[in-house]
Length: 63
Picture 1 (cartoon, helix red, strand yellow):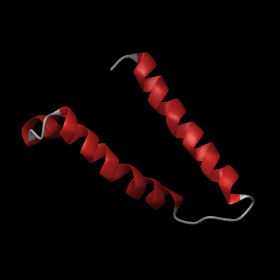
Picture 2: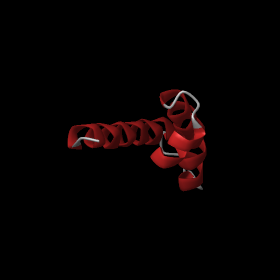
Picture 3: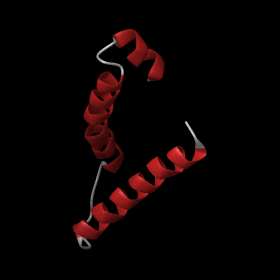
Picture 4: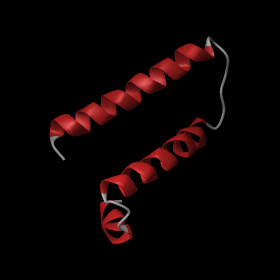
């Protein structure tokens, strides 16, 4: 992974979190860490499995 790719992912997460907080419109939130993990886990696993053409051994090494 290049630094630019890593920075891009970091910026994407920061942007998504900023949108989330803006959408809260001043309301409070709880369990944010758990919410983020729950929302990210499924698409992460799906993307890795697609990238490895469903090769679980390769996916395991990537993850």
